[in-house]
Structures are given as C-alpha cells and as structure tokens.
Amino acid sequence: MSQQEREELVQDLIRLVTSRLLDPLDILLGDDPAIEAMRHRVRQDAGTWADELLGDDRARATHRGARLVAVLYPGDTAFDPPADWWRTPLGRAIARRVGHPSAERVSYAVAGAMLGITRQGVHDLVRRGKLHAHPDGGVTTPSIRERLDTRDLGQAHEQ
Image (cartoon, rainbow, N blue to C red; front, side, top):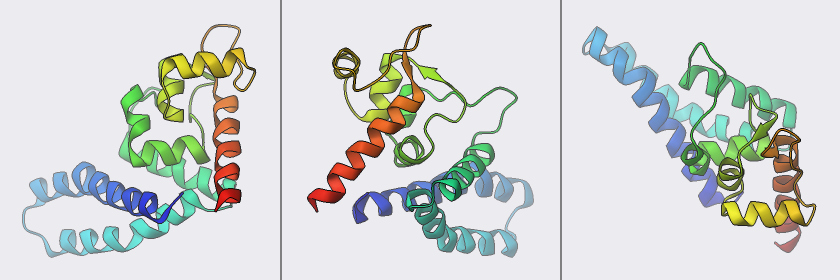
C-alpha cells in the first residue's frame, strides 16, 4: 500500500473509533476530560493499528483486523458487511491482509468490491482460473486474498 493509502486508513480508523465508540460515550457521560484523553490516544494509536494491518506479519495483521472488526461492528451474527464496505480504507486493508473474516465464499459483487473491480471482471478472472468459483456459488475468499497478495507483490516489484 502507498503512503497515501496508509494515511487514508489512519483517518478512517480515527473516524470509525470516534463515531462508533467515543461519541456515544460523550453523549452518555457529558463533557468528561477522560473522553478527550481517549480521543488523543486514538489519534496516536491509529497509525500503529494501520501499520499492523498493512505490515508483513500476517498473523499480527489478522489479529489486529479481527479486533477492529469485533469492536467496531459488534453483533450476534457473523460479520457480513455490504459490498460497499469493502471499498472503504478499512475494508480494503481487511480484504488484503485478512480476507473475509467470516465467509468461505462471497458473491461476485462482493468479490468485485474486495478486489476493486467490476462483477464482470470477477467473472473473467474465474473463467481464466485466476479466481476459484465455489461449488455452492460465488467465489472462494481464499482465492480473493491470494489474488490481492499476487497483485500487491507485482506492484512492489514495479516500485
């Protein structure tokens, strides 16, 4: 990922943690200096979280991604975001480093969103054997992550 993509991820993390966690606390607790201290801490730590998500250590990236998803998108069911979520900075980072956290297969539309291409582009990649169709329909999520890894390696060699 480029420095610009890293910065977009940092800003997205700050926005998400602030709006989903700190703003509700601010509403409940009122003007509390502890909340402002937490806002400052989030602005500091978001860079570390981004570096962990984007770093070479896949286990660390997976762990950080799982923690962020669990905290930012809590629920009683498996995490299954809409296709547009995969186009956000956090969605792109999760797709690249973790894959889909709760699905072995996704629709062609979601696969396209995860890859940043059209649904027709996904069909083409499946037909050419660059992505794997799932027997029950859709595309396997491991093949999407492999494709993202291959694409990232190709871009790294070009730089």
